[in-house]
Length: 269
Image (cartoon, helix red, strand yellow):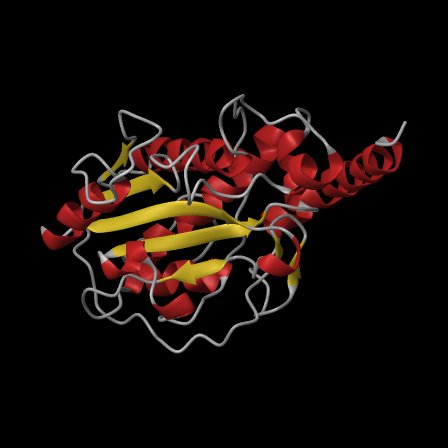
């Protein structure tokens, strides 16, 4: 009985998310600080960078799921508002909900990117807990090597709920001048200052971080509800891939123009 208010609130947020989901897929990315119907609030922090460095059309893109190598230790990612505040069960035992959704989005981004002809691949560490951040199997090490070889490394994240989170946005890689891929993703999701929290481990190693949104309503209920989950994940992946296509100077296959809306793909599973 003690969880009933949270359950009712969750059901209400889910209903609202279902109503807004189509709008989220069609709408232009919101202005900084505004609220997107699907991904929620966008970063209000001032973006102090512009990505102008062009990338080759066939640049190898490496996509990773944030916190995939740090479960059960410091840096495991957020549990999300549903679990931490309202007593919901984690999406997968032994895994923080952020990683669960990081993996779901990263895999869909790569699958869709391959369909659209991008030179893109996914890296998943062989273990979920690797204590040494410089172990060659970690996201940091693999991403650093990929970026040093001239590739583009992107790590997917969901931000913390409540006042600890900032919202959707890009934290760019710091190893060389900012890329047009960073710029395109920032236009789609928002941007963080380049030295956010003094410079995070991933960006210092050449890895761009993309915060999809805070793991709270409206985004989290749309993901957790099995009815809305396929559309929500598809809409997010579509937005990411369209931004990558734009950053490479391509006409996004899923939208009408370079400034057009992100549309839901049919038949997502």
